[in-house]
Length: 176
Image (cartoon, rainbow, N blue to C red; front, side, top):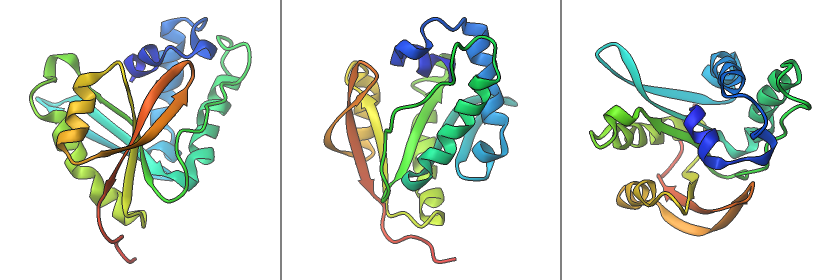
């Protein structure tokens, strides 16, 4: 997951040493809010090792999820001030915040399998659309999302990068 933050080149994080950033990210993904509260973390394993992770949540829960990072960075000496994430989604979609596959396992269908699992979680959270942002400098990821049926809905600025916002209609939410 650290790779995602590195590739996003967020100026707010550029002065934070890699090990300190990794420590905060690891703590966030161990937080109950990330595991099974406001958000959902789906993992792919091979040979007892985690080789892929998908992380998402309903758009209306974005502030709750972002508060976890803000709280953790406020308590870390490596951060001059709490990290305040920019809005990346909106109510009305289940937002795939992060998808990461171990480089040694890329090209083996792990990303596709994680994406195929997401509609269940989105419907469970009463959403009928999955949204995501893909970096225009990552054509491999764009091709994967395109093959899975995601459609570009418009540009999205995150930090200094332009992303394509994409969505997938998944049908009716599950009634609970």
